[in-house]
Length: 171
Image (cartoon, rainbow, N blue to C red; front, side, top):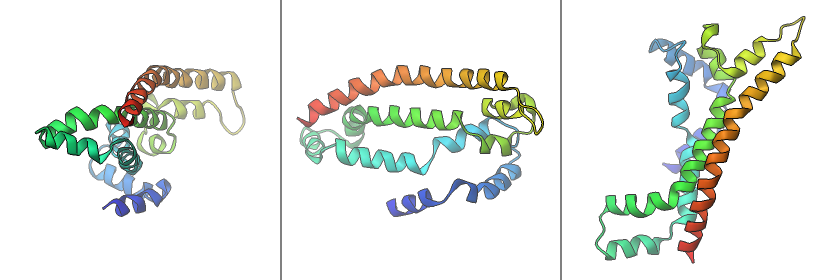
């Protein structure tokens, strides 16, 4: 199953964009923000990243000790695994947010109404073939960076705290 995920990661995004558009059109979800959010939540890289993180950060002895203490599967998952995987969850959340925020191709294909354009699309529409308003482009770029900096500032504190806790568990 993991090899299927790796093969899916190797497919370039523009290769499947026509199929993606046809599916979205069949579901009548064109020109909808939900279409931009849902596909980014479930991506192959996240599965790969989580598996690799868990393989490195979660020793089998810890799970075995929890089983010996009488913990069930759900208790082990909620009490031990999630506590140690928080840095990976936050890191993947930041990477997904930045990738979605900067996405250009998917909103260009999905959104038709100029009132619903994302910021990268708005920045691109400021310029045409004969004239480019560089001032407006630079202001748009500055505005587009602000949410990413805010997300990074809040998440970096969580990542550093939890990584140091995970290092203490490894001993």
